Image 1 (tube, rainbow, N blue to C red):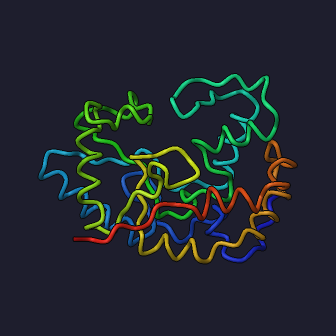
Image 2 (tube, rainbow, N blue to C red):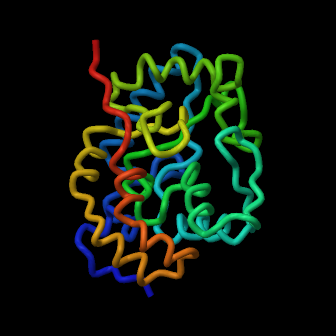
Image 3 (cartoon, rainbow, N blue to C red):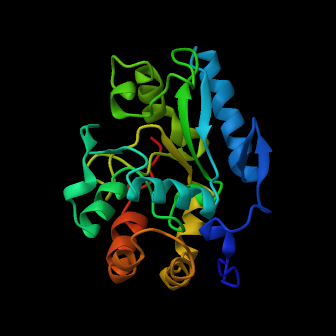
Amino acid sequence: MLNTNIDNPALYGLVQTHLVNIQGYSLTVKTAAAFNQMQQQAAIENIDIQICSAHRTFEKQCSIWNAKAQGKRVLLDLQNHAIDIESLSDNEIVDAILCWSALPGASRHHWGTDIDVFDANQINQQQLKLISDEYLTDGPCGALSSWLQLNAHKFSFYLPYQVDQSGVSPEPWHLSYYPESKQFLTQYDPKNLKLLLSNSNISLKSALINRLDELVERYVYFIADYPIAD
């Protein structure tokens, strides 16, 4: 059973009492309000911003992690090519998973401040693969990506995972509501994460615990800076 007697359980995806439902997804009240405003403005410019992922519990993130670690879910490299994990060491599998999926207990999606978005005018959610090619200039979400680069900060959102600025692959679909996510990040405690993982059923546990300080520094703290509005 997970140890829930840790400080600030919302930081690690253990509680949802701080969240509200918006369009079927759970977000903080302020994140939801800011998203509504951004969505309305984008609609005026013929871009239909829709959420495809928001808050995830620790258990949900752990199920994603375990499926990839056990070869039940496809692992992709940075070029979106499938990886054969049979020849990889535990540490190599950990690094491969972290290119695209956050460590349970260390995902920004636990907070309710971060969302993955797409342009529903150009592609439906069933077709969406959430890969970089879809957000290139000639991709179905290319116009959305360009719009976000110019306008997301006006609604206090930003893109935390950008080229050469994070330990994970660039994610042009991942938005973070900065006024609240910055507070969550400053309150984050790796000691709580270690306790949580030690009491979980996560795959590759030993490899993770042995490298946890390095992994937190690389994948939790090392993110893009919030852009300053012109």
